[in-house]
Length: 338
Image (cartoon, rainbow, N blue to C red; front, side, top):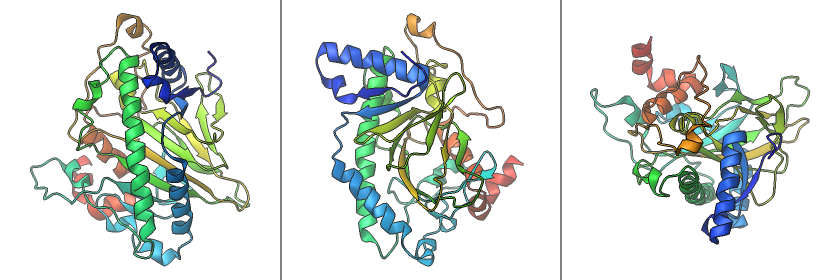
């Protein structure tokens, strides 16, 4: 199968006949091993859930700036809330997007000096007072995205020779998931088209729903940039670096980027990142010999080393991406790292 196109898999076949299931697993192995990105259809999420989150997103970004800034993420030690254009960084450069960051709704913990610092990432979200429907729509989409992502994780376990419940020991009721509601403003006359700079996701699985404009690009094994053209009714999935590490490179975390839309038209997308509980330390997965023979080893960025401990790795990512929030709330951690 080609590595110059992004494959499509039908998740409903995972629960179909034995023949359907085996073909689905073969297609999934190809997509994750050779490409690292895939379209997923047959996921069972009603289109209304997707339509509602996009409608709420457009209404949120249409609010006056002062209403969005009332929930600025500078107010949140958990990096939740609204981020203005240019305030999140990828590869040290500001991204041309504004966004709302949402995590699992939990109260903040009473974290002492001897507790792991990453536990301070647990806490409440921020929501605009004048748009109550945003919370309902986003949390409904978050629930649906988590269900589909965990079903995909079960499918990956089986495709890699494990019991389908293999990952549940880390992805439990304390899973640390994360969602972004993003607007990429049209770049007008600007030359720089970086919506999000080229990068790999450091976590496990990412699910993305995008509007009709496109702009997401995926780098093939040959170094070619492939357009992840929007496909109605589908989710885009990609492999994160921690899943690449667990499989010693059999699964591929793929470099990708977002190009800002030309002109004055805005692009909207909602990515969901499935994470285990913060205290999880991920082992190397015991692959069957025939798959282990095809593992390429791990290809990581020397300037951004990956940590096996999920909580530590997650905190490192937030501190790098949001330097102003880091200075506001995490100066003690920054000092200990210097």
